[in-house]
Length: 309
Image 1 (cartoon, rainbow, N blue to C red):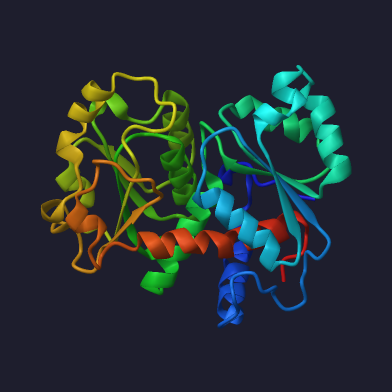
Image 2: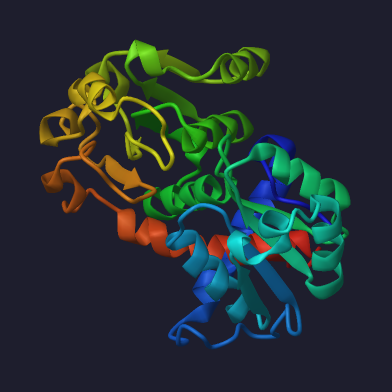
């Protein structure tokens, strides 16, 4: 049994095995319909329990399809339906019930401590579907998408991030260290990564730079990432924050400083951080990026169950 909580804690060889399996599974599906099961139905009879404490579209849909295509099933719980929030039941007791009824637990949470608590008491794998500090399933899928489009290892590419320092960037930083790719981070001075993340960068051999000039950030980039400036539950002065990021809006002019075949990725939903002409351009690969979540999450599930091919 293996958990999937943070890319920092997973050996790079295991991450590579997940990506290899995802590529094989995507290729082997051919023209199968959405709910048709993969050959061999490797997770037949298995139940994935999902709980969402934060809004979700892509993570919810992709995990639902991932377990279905592997031959298993899923049950989605809302926290306001459980004694965990309504009746004061402990995480320990909730975890024991989940372990008895389900085979894996995917949690999208507003509290990193809950992930650690659930991991402590669960006897089934737990997967982080998003937490305040990381979004590992998103970024591993993004690595898959980049290598699929560029047809080369990400370690040979220059990746740029333009935007806020948030959970998605934290996982991208972890991926940069794991896969050894160049990562240029462009953000206003007031929104650089936290002291904890800066310490993590400093302690590990890396190819990461942080600057506050969007043009310099994207020079020579093969890929430009962004995310919504105002994140879910972002308790800030929104007008002030958006003003700080005006200079960092991704438009055609900014894209012109990157390589000619540079692609644009965004984990969605989008906001004012990207111009419509970029978002809907041929350089934008956001729909392919979103769909690939299914394929990679299938392999993450198999990894957690110890069934990677």
